[in-house]
Length: 322
Ligand code: SF4
Ligand code: SF4
Image (cartoon, rainbow, N blue to C red; front, side):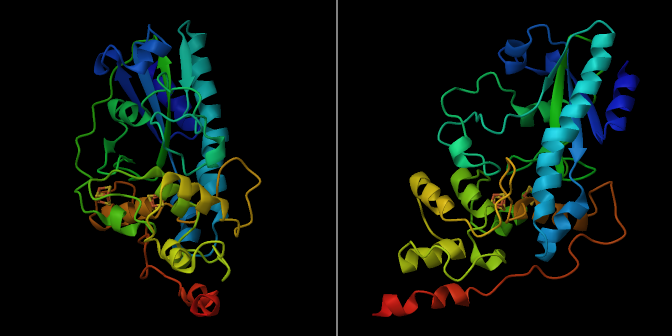
């Protein structure tokens, strides 16, 4: 059955498949609340196409990452693979519970998910019974946990999304990945256009949301000169430069003033930062020759681009100088 599961999952576009026996989880792990008879957690990893990141890397197209790299994977490809693999398991007389991340229910209080509208995030319920997705991925041997809490796989680095199936079928375990990729280089931290990741690797989700959505004018080709005109002139410039200090409530106000990219008529917000943290990590791992999936050209072929912020400095300056 193990080989059949891998074969079907790969037919359904999973790139990495891993198996974690129940013994790898503490008895109070959510997997046992969700399904007390869990014997195996099956992890399915789906690469985010490297080409999908090219548009943001070049500063040309932004739509592809969100629609193809986030929405299509999460809402179409991954559920389809989950259903088909789960059906195969249930055909054999075992139970299979597909587990995909709910982007709207968060484990940590007072946080947000940059990939969705903050007003959609549901705070009325505690997500105690949602899997700890990252640790499940590590337990399934899909990859290692990085300094900033992303999953790094030896094949695709951080360009990966993942989901799981809980089953009462016993399946041979996949060995855990030996941590060998993240060297604490901090390239991910330096790459964030909004300084959303602290030195210790923790991310301020509200800062991330603000800059994921494109508040840094030097990294947003769509920002018009009048952007953030509702804010005090100095504050506006700090927001646009990525250096502003703001509370969670102020982050909401900034997000409410980001309307200069054609709004996606979809559930997920368009990523204007283009996951600069993950791209920087990918480039670092590729340069070190650590990724097993190689390409005939390096991902970054020229120096990273940056736009002038002069137009924002000029807008409203006269009023301020009056
Ligand atoms: S860029 Fe990658 S390897 Fe370097 S610290 Fe960040 S996560 Fe680790
Ligand atoms: S680079 Fe983008 S996704 Fe990464 S922490 Fe910064 S804003 Fe968030």
